[in-house]
Length: 173
Image (tube, rainbow, N blue to C red; front, side, top):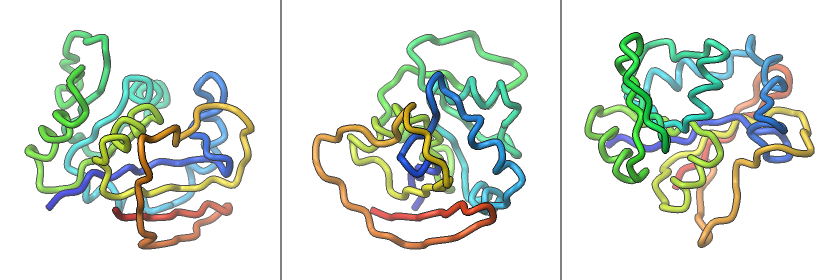
């Protein structure tokens, strides 16, 4: 059975981006092999927020192999013929996840950002969390985890250490 996987990088103090969506602190890790290709080989669909999608396009970080991608947005643009695998939707996240899971027998990547991750957590729709912790303290910005309506427990499955002090924690629900 496929899982919904939140796979995301955070600073030591829990931010996914600095002020004004600044992600420059991540750029020095572009040359670190932190298992992304291995992770992505198990992904059959992606769900992400509009801001995360725009940052990805801006930096040329399109996925290595196009997979169906759902972009959560209140503003639905015309379909992009150059990226026919991308669908903008304003549907509820549980419905989007249901559709994504029906399209593949592989895992669904909940790519982010923080607002999207929070929506999935609040509804207890995330099965696996993979946090790549970057050894930097930002002090301000966009926190990954906000308030939840109740405690949600996860179990640590794996800890991996990579170059430049990056640590990756994998939790399952």
